[in-house]
Length: 117
Length: 111
Image (cartoon, rainbow over all chains, first blue to last red; front, side):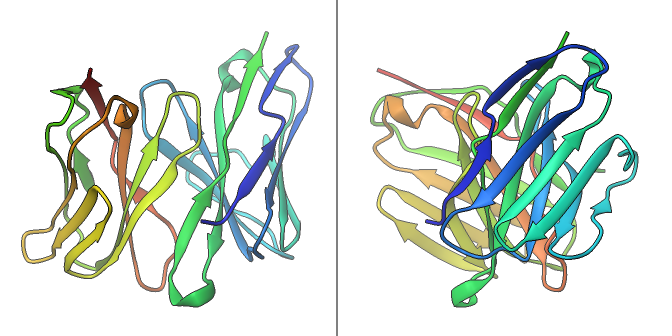
């Protein structure tokens, strides 16, 4: 299957700092990428849909000024958590939509664990 | 009512058992159905992808979709301890690429 990478895999930061997470599709072009958040023992919560070359679409309740998303190329999307606070500590996972070959599916990155002190 | 319902488990089975994992859904417009496996602290890994009703088999895994009952299943034959993970069902309807996920079922296969 297709490969999606995320960097960093883990980050610890102080409250008030900003953290950038990168999501890359390594062997296919992704016009659409998604950002999810996952709390322990809970399912994935979609935060936003990122479309290459346009503004992201945020889910209800997700602060767009808090979670900045940029999808500058067909293989890279970034999520920046601005002025992070302890309640932002979570597991952030991206996925990339692959619509090549007629099948429509999402491939997920390995996730980024954020801990805000 | 949630759009997708999935028993969170945990489900414990002995090694070699046949495992049945299920999801029900309420939106009859869903046409694409997936099963993902997620190990602890990792991203979900796509296991099975099914369009509309029917069965699909891949090695020890079989996915079934019954659209009339709004019910999907994943069967794992000859389960192994390495199958211990959380299994998430996901689905979406044509025209939107937003996946709707189940809560995930935690599976433990005991050696």
